Length: 432
Image 1 (cartoon, rainbow, N blue to C red):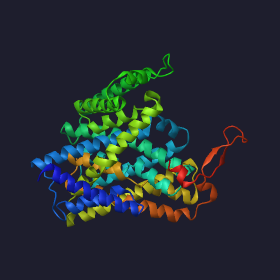
Image 2: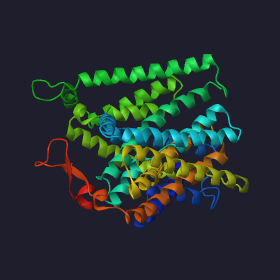
Image 3: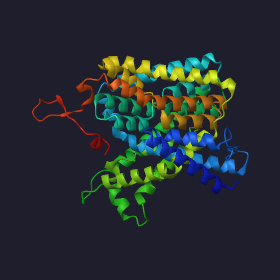
């Protein structure tokens, strides 16, 4: 099949599936994956993703571009300020417990199934992920984004993304070294490579931070430099070059390029580029991602899905452990952070929306040879199930919320410093 014809089939079907889910007030990602399943070998057989064919290998390249822009956008949305905001409240306690418990359960399940140490680490990481974009979308639809519950879910998702990509880097390195039970020398080499990569990220971050100093014209050195470049979309090119550079460095050190692209996005901040240019870059990356590459990538995930009868026990086990792990982790962490009643249960449920991040991890794991097709299918089905279940369960729990559980808090001029008072924000305002 010609690549353009194949992409046309994938793109149109994915967009149609996404639009249908949008009308049902669900994540469009779900419709895009289902569209991929429809046109893939499991149903209609219009698309053959076999990498041994010319079309299949080209499709894999396009899918990798999808991974690149998705994680770049995730990094841009997260930003360096995201983690600082998470540290301001006790959400870090929730983040630690909520990641550690699902990770432990996933690792234990994989070990019980006879998987290797590296595979078990990957499964644990996959089951501990929470997708920030999907979580934000759900919270906005329920008008909870600016509530304490909403801030906690977003903060935990931010930390989860950071830890998950760090773990992904370790797991991919162990896999590339071709060892199932890492020895001390192998562990030392992996640690050294990760230290080198982290050092590189900090060096790049330090250099970029130096360029944020204001010059004579009240603009930073970076803004002045970008303004002098004659090429169109110079700031966008700087963002892509940074992400590609860190992605290439990650690949050279045996880490997946997605990890480098993710941190490249984090380094792009309004302070570095100026708020106007930053917004332009974010909008441009978002348009390229969700307008082109995301539908193709998520449909590609569905095309690669292959479910057999023998895989259903694994699918049920993965889905159950994933949901229970997140629920219990959120409840335990939320209890320490001061949540009680329905909001406490809602915290655990809200963290179950895995969405984009889970599918990216699953695709990377399959491409790197960490997991097989059955486990890949189990992770995809688990992602769709948990993401679909989260909104309706949250809506039912909201019936038991008190007024202060829903209303956001903002500083009051009449209140003492450090004391916050509730304020109502409409859905339209919270969505802007």
